[in-house]
Image 1: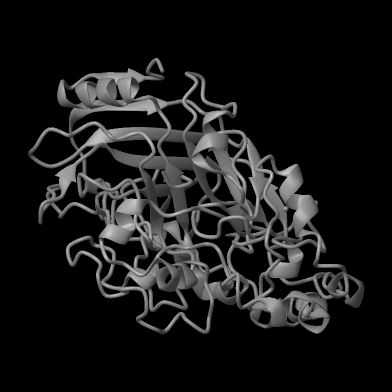
Image 2 (image 1 turned 90 degrees about the vertical axis):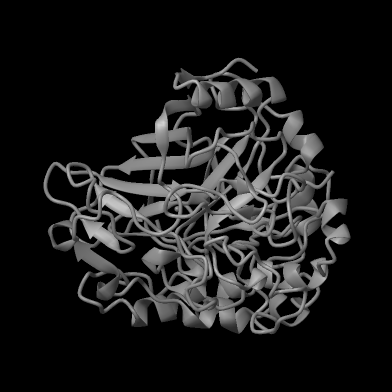
Length: 442
């Protein structure tokens, strides 16, 4: 089976293999993987069956627009790997672009100095050995570093100026019934700039730092086997892995200054740990949900939204005390109010595949009534609710690819279900019977 699924700097890498069932579906994995990993030379092409997404998935029509945090085709990076000029200029570009009125770029001008740019990029083998997968990692990617800039003022909105929309917008998040099940996996187990799903074995494949909860081993070289042998931060022993880009306090300083995924990729500031991370599965629509299968992999949102015309965007932010006002901008919360991020996953499954080449085609979002269509079946809808103490004003943003310049709508998350099938079955019963269950026995 396929491999499943801070502060002046950021780093991310990724990895995964594709299931045999994908090839049976006729998709061109290599072409789609190129777009998944963010190779700009391929991002505008339609190779890899890029027009085959389900039209009612609620996530755009082009498969090549997958969240895909990996950034750079593994075979096309030779010209970029040792590009000292590009890497050395990262700090200067940060500094030059920091005059947006928030002081976000102040002090960043010397982070990407020439010494950083000249470091040896050929250490992938050592990194791979240390990551527990025993695989040699591909060399670090540095694409897009000439476009580093902080989030602009237009990315922020006063929460008082957000219309009441009932607490939701975009795809998913429309639940039915009282039943649910949740798992307590803590708030942050570890960080890295990897993505084993979109960029398997690739060091800094995401070019931004992820927060992880659940599986304690998740990195670029993760596989089904390695994940199943690892520990977990989840109280009930659930080995699932959940991850999303970190949020940073731009007035602080992280420990990844001058590092890939950190300041070298334009990700600066002190990483903020959530006060809470709620992982809850709910029902939706008119039909009972089927149990979620073990090893199901999926993504939500689009880390490359700006480069891919806003397709698959599903960013949702609000503030405590204003939870009927949800926005896709960074909300500036009032005194005593906390920042909330809502990560809603697709919950209609094709009933067969545990993954697909772009990690989207086997899944779809339900319609506005919560129902699935076109042969897709309802499974529990995962919502991740992250709550933070927000820095004052506009001095915060999530990590992003350099080209995305910390746009609020690039928020995204990846998930692989490694809960036991027994607990998945019981979870579906909890939902369908209207019970609220927690930390189901594995």
